[in-house]
Image (cartoon, rainbow, N blue to C red):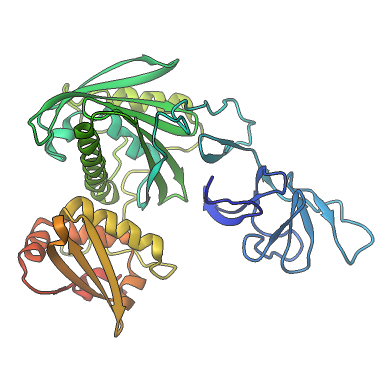
Length: 409
């Protein structure tokens, strides 16, 4: 919600569509297809809020929250066909939600209220956000994949997941040992799905709620947000552990992302008895979603002669949000507390700083290289164990090889 201030206008892209989100003068958010029905101007680029509608920057046609044309300032009458697609929205828990249905069915669920949001006993949201080359339903399996916590994230023990109902919703409860500076403690992670979001409660170190939203941008990318809130007034030692917990959760997410962005989704995976309730998760998805939801086998990019998939060419230059994602990755995978960025002579330098601002590593990369490759490919390269070891062992700046990062032609 905070990204859409009074009179705010945001160009968006979700579900393979260009959209425009705006906040009318009444404060109500509205979402329309982005392109004016007159001559196709993008209403999110230069459009302005006027009353309860949005004025086109090209010829000043005025569009209402419902997509109806209210005014053509230089015409005596409005064409009957002057209408834009309006998408159902609601604002709840600090987010603006939209309803999307491939077959245009109306909403059949409401977004529940989260009692912790804005409650004085809970902290304001801390947000982490990623653009991930994956599919939302594939990523969702993580919540019920017990085994990967031990082998990918190095958990002290493999969690045991059971199913139940919490706050009227079906939930998964995973009990595990959580590593702390004072040794392992008993912890539990309770995850449940609510309309438009996932809720994860972490107990055992510092009571923490993570609100997860996952929106498909198109058939290849997902916009993923984690918003963290923690209970106030806990023991100061627990609060410090709570901050360490958030750093560890960021690390785990970045470890997951590397897997998500380079794996394939098998519709008939080889599962064994201790893999957890993955099959049940998939069955529940097939009940909730209609249409051609699951991809065909082998839809991932074909590898080259060395077994590596070609990097994906970017359509837009490397932007601030890309740097934020890259910094999150370097904090999580490389253990950096801070990442400082500087630019000059066509190069970008990233300084990785640890505890007490001790230098961990310095990375240099050609700006042109960044503008041509996706963050997913950069993450995949930097996650390689040999690359990571070489970077952290170096006393001086490491220049990332452009030929391995740029898309092949």
